[in-house]
Image 1 (cartoon, rainbow, N blue to C red):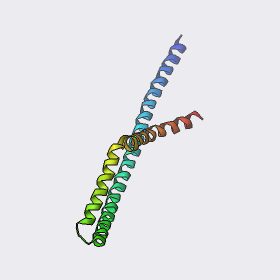
Image 2: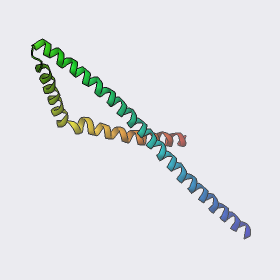
Image 3: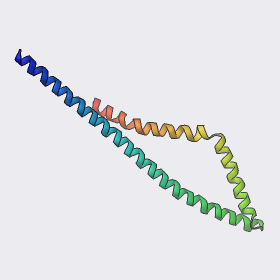
Image 4: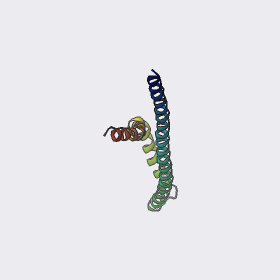
Length: 124
């Protein structure tokens, strides 16, 4: 009887250890996913910042070239502004399908993809 009591306590202690280890593993997996997502967001922000300046200087170059071509200093800038207004209107009309959904899906894939890879690795 004493042996069964000790075996039962041992099983309970092992189960408590398992639960605590599992909780710690989940915390680490969430932390890793959050860190990966934050790193991707930081890289995206940096690329967006650099891309903004490339677009800005390219736009200025095109506007100045058009102004020289047409002969009026304001005309090139007006043409570039109208082009951007048209692009902005088009993006506004199709924003959810072309921007919102793909970004949402990419974040979900990034977050769940790491977990799926780990689950496949653990299952093998």
